[in-house]
Length: 326
Image (cartoon, rainbow, N blue to C red; front, side, top):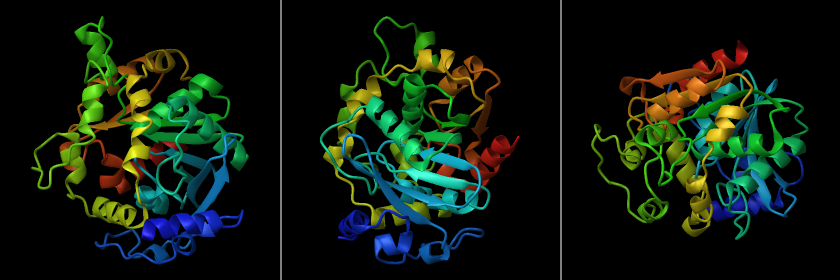
């Protein structure tokens, strides 16, 4: 019901951005008290939610806070701006931070068309145009990195100042003729998309082991108070449609971005991964082929898994800011 109310509130919102509490229709108390992070949503007075309509008629929501140089976050598959609440809070003290909810995710409209990375990348371009950004820093997490690679492939890097990619394989599905070295460098984990799509129907482990490196286990571990807070907030205000979310997955899984990574990334780049992630080899390969790219590998003690930016937002924000300000 809360998710429905949020969607209705967003649809009724005026053209200007509205405070998050007004759009969502209520406040939210975070379950854990974390130093340097808000105790309630209303403590984050600068957080706003706005929307714009794409060229193919889809209303996309975006979250924003702060002033200064623009920093645009592109969430991964099924993710949304609510999950970025801690990063928005920290980084908005130095930048004008935006998080775009992709179509069929977060508070954005659910539609049966445009379920391909190229369209998501076009949405990102239209979002940048909507904001009037002449140049900005872009950070993509998981599938969000693929959306930025698609953006660069289609539109180049003219409007890009610096880039950040967080723990995304270069090609999730392997080609049949690839060598083992090529598979490792690309980060491929399956010979076809079907088993990966089938895995989406499996329930995540209810009581995962703290030593389990499996991605779903790492997701379900609420071993970080900050992560527990952002997940609780997202679960309270976002109502996902699993069928809508799955529409983009086949296209996402079958894209091979090696040519873009090798030939088209010509901006300063930071890559983040962690010791709990299976993607470390592909992230090392990406660093090796992107000129002067830097690689951050978080340790297990630093919450270095696929969700590192949400589990350890203070460290990630500090590392990202150091990179952006150099």
